[in-house]
Image 1 (spheres, rainbow, N blue to C red):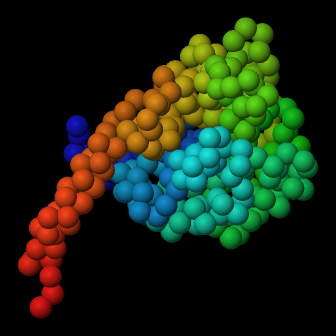
Image 2 (image 1 turned 120 degrees about the horizontal axis):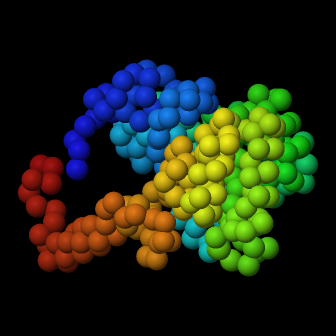
Length: 284
């Protein structure tokens, strides 16, 4: 494993490993697309984790509605609210200094109208300090995207498997096979024209993701979409080994569940036997 620091892995202009000094912006993401540079995005939900990922050089942090599952314990993303995500977003902003922080607009906070979308997005930007928002859907949310962008809110789009619509999709299934792939392509182009600065492609065939990526001037961010997208995103608990049954597209880079279990058992045993606290942990 490389021991390189963000300052030593790339030039000041690169997204991953570029030098700190200011926040990454949507213009930086566009420039990376033009250079053909690939970059990582991770979820974050608290200040301490955000600080670690920020110092590691990760240029974009997503406060995902996946917090519904990994923070709040729900079995889908649907129940989480704006009120639930605002303090998490604020914590990630406070814990980072370089990363662009994107906040998910949760289910029910933008679907009814462009005005509702703007009200929700404004709260994330004014109250939590988010730098952009993400919303799910294609042509049906174009009015929302256009309204947000015209109001000065950067919008990250999300196509393919859209977890907020899992109940209408019949479960967590690969999207975009056959004729539906052309619909996804059309949605992606419409979202770009509406002003979205990037689009997440979740659980779509790799060849479709590659075609979408080459057809757009804005970055694509893959999650279960193969290697050809401009960026890749994972829920951090998945890649760190905290998720019991991760999806096929997840690569586990650590086993924190095992480490936490060992540490908790060691602490509990030492407390039970009187070995902790030892003299060196005690004030006189």
